[in-house]
Amino acid sequence: MKIVLAGGAGEVGRHLAASFCEWGHQVVILDRSEQVSTVEPDYNLTIVQADLSDPEVLKESLVDCDVVVNLAWSFAEDPRELFSDDIIGHINLMDAAATAKVRRYIYASTASVYGTPQSQPVTEDQVCLPEEARKPMYGVAKYTAEKLSLAVCRQYGVPITNFRFWWAFGDSIGGKHLRQLIRKAMQGEPLHVAAGAGGTFLSMNDLAAAIELAVVRPQAIGATYNLGSVFLTWQEIGASIIEYAKSRSQLTVETAKPWDGPAFLGETWDISWAKAAREIGYNPLLDPDSARAAFNQALARCVDGVRKGSR
Image (cartoon, rainbow, N blue to C red; front, side):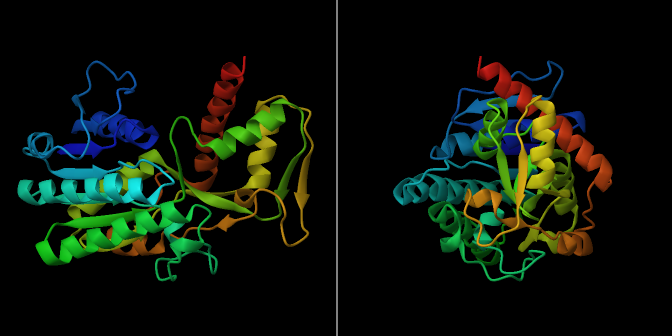
C-alpha cells in the first residue's frame, strides 16, 4: 500500500513510517518541518516538505494513495491558529483524499476530547466534554476535527476512521511532563504521585496495526475507536524513573483527596479498546508484561536523552 503520513515528521509519524516501511509499504511523509530524522537507506520512503494549505502538493502526494493518516497538528494554544491552520488543513487533506479516492483516511485524535473521565474505563459512549480538558482549546479543536471527519464521511462518502488514544510510545517516548519528572529525579527531588493515577499507553506498533485493520474492515468507515496497549500507574513509572536515573529521590504515593499536585499526575485514563477489538479485531501485539517491558525500554531511552541534554 501507499500510505501518506501528514505531519509525519513528528514523534508518532517517524515511528509509524519505520513500521510501515518495515512491513513493505510505500510511505510518503508530508510535513512542513525540515526536522525529519534519518531513515534507513533501503526504506521505500519519500519526504515532501509542505504544509496542508497547498492543494497542488496534496494532489501530487496523494496520487495512487491507498491510505492517508492525518497526524498534522500545531498544538497551539490560540484558537485562531488551531482553526485557521489545523482545522483548515484537515479539511484540505480530506478534500484531496476524496479526489484521490483513497481506501481509508485515518484521523489521529486524542483522549483529551473526553475532557475529564466521567467513569472508568473510558469508553467511546462517554459524553465528550473537551472544554473541561487540561488544555481546553486543544480538546475542542480536536473534537471539532473528529466531527468534521464524520460529517465528510457521511456527506461525501470519504472512508474515514477516527482513532483516540492517550499517550503513544515507540522505541522512545516523549512528553514534557515525563521529562519534568525525570529532571526532578536527576536533581534528587522527591516525586509525589496520586494513588492509582495513571493511563493507558499505546505502542506505535499497535497504532500501525490498528491502521492496517481499519483499511480492510468496512465497519471501520465512519467509526471512532479508542486504542491502547497497557495501563501503567504513575507510581510504577516514577519508580522506574528513579531506577533508570540512578536517583536518590523518594517516591511518595499520596492517598489524600483532593490531589493538590500537578493535574496530569492526579488523573486516571483507563482507556478501553473493547469496541475496536469487537468491531475490527484490534488487540495489542504484546501481552501486558511484554508491553510493560517495551514501555520501560522507551522510558530508559528518554531518561538517557534527558541526561545527555542536561549536560
